[in-house]
Image (cartoon, rainbow, N blue to C red):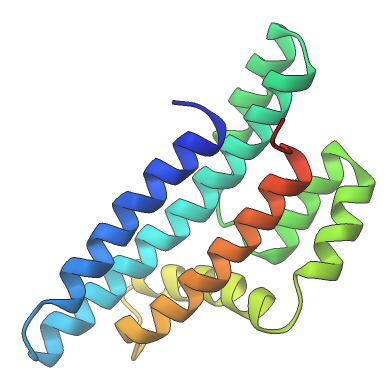
Length: 157
């Protein structure tokens, strides 16, 4: 699977976990565990989506050697906070960075940055007080950012 299809498939897997989380008992600890797990999944979804967007752009516009280069370098794309996303897009096209900066404001920027701050806290065992509802809000914002990036970098033909 490539491009938009790969991103959609990954999104469906994350959506399925959100659906399972919504059906668990009212046990507060179980819900908190799900919220932490969902945060990690959302962070991975953002990272892999941006990697796939850049790779699909290279597939559409470049040679096989460029595709290999982009694949090797975007596979290492981690901790995709707002600034790293802007840097990645700007390294391909300065106009993409400008356009994303204009889009990535307020709740969308806060959501992207929060996902990574929380994920790092979870990884280091720092209590977060995170809820599934909050992660869902961040996820909804992240999906909007990814959709904007797809339209920007890999327009449908």
